[in-house]
Length: 225
Image 1 (cartoon, rainbow, N blue to C red):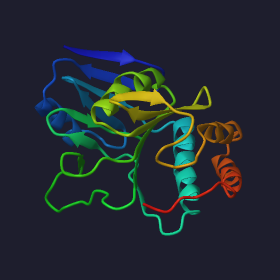
Image 2 (image 1 turned 135 degrees about the vertical axis):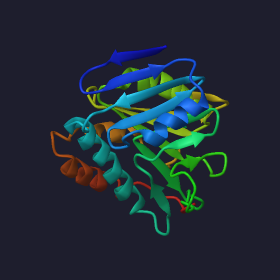
Image 3 (image 1 turned 180 degrees about the horizontal axis):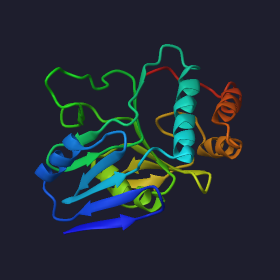
């Protein structure tokens, strides 16, 4: 049975219960990657038809990208790899299309000619952090997607609430996600500082990112991984 659930324009969620891995592969391999995001977990397949990316989602998404760049610019010799919009999956069980996928240190996935252009988490190591920017998808990001990333054992998960101007950060502890006030992947970064940065954005993410860069100059840094 296929249900179409309208959230708030422009996102439309197409949901297929009792789906198979073959159903997931059919959709993920034939979707318009710029407009649709495909997720699969516990036999449920859902597709977020984003349309063209909205202004608010794009602005917040790029802010997070700049925050990562400014954060790691302070740590000499660190390697980090940001795979925005890349599909991650564990074959036969889970698949997801996060807004941001962050690898810190060595061993980030590399594309091999002839293989699917997706990250196989049965062959590649887990990312250190996954981020979802929630403009019109907050309920799903805090429910179905949270459970999906928990099943994938993603060690840290952020939900950036566009309308609420807040960041909900979760770390994996004893097989469960627990909300945290300080990032584990970005050691020493208070989540509260992210929220203060978002509060200053006022329709200009570049200026907010520069303000963030100034605030972190005196924070302690640890050796790179």
